[in-house]
Image: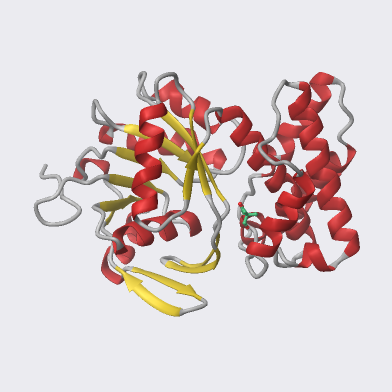
Length: 316
Ligand code: KPL
């Protein structure tokens, strides 16, 4: 079967797995700067639609359309330099298995996902290939298939998950920077992932339960206190595991993300509204699991976990 190229005569540099809010946003930002990027989607109808209609990005400057090839069949894409996972944490195993035919000898896997445990799954299935973890503070809402509202920019931080992947982390960061996506490399993946988990454990369930955009946390005292306590509990659990978060001040970090993505609906709220499964288990669920294991009380994370599971079960 003939494999397609992202653009005439060029090998694909990045395949983004998962055309959700962040996957479409990153695919569009990279393609706009001329990078050979393609999307891999498990859904054949949606992938046809995206290839035909393109990705519509809405932001404060207006609206634009970016064409990115999208495939459901991994055999129709050539192995990329980077395979970037932008899927929900509970889909990591299935998406990795779907993408396996795409892995070339040199392909580097990047987990650009929320939650804890994704890189471990990717490592188990990728036969020793280099793995990177990445965390982004971009706020992006999928209005419908291929239509995203870019509600706020922020840095994307990359860390090597496997030994000797530092070089690849720098190469990935440089590629993003060339596309205008602010990126930095940090040496320790656990630090990065727990730092992002503290933000997500605070913002995502609180906004999902209250059904409000991220900025409401700064405006409502009750939400702010709940979000801050969830972040502090996460920080305590991480510290007990020997992991110091990257923030000088974790509460300020939560507030900054709320401010920078004030009009964004968190990914968890988007999932609840659409009656889809949320990532609560991979975020607050992991904080609770490790907290119990280490004897650190995490009552706010427990409460948020149970409440989101309840709401999500009702909606689904
Ligand atoms: O990661 C996010 C998410 O919604 O999952 C934040 C940064 C909170 C942006 O909404």
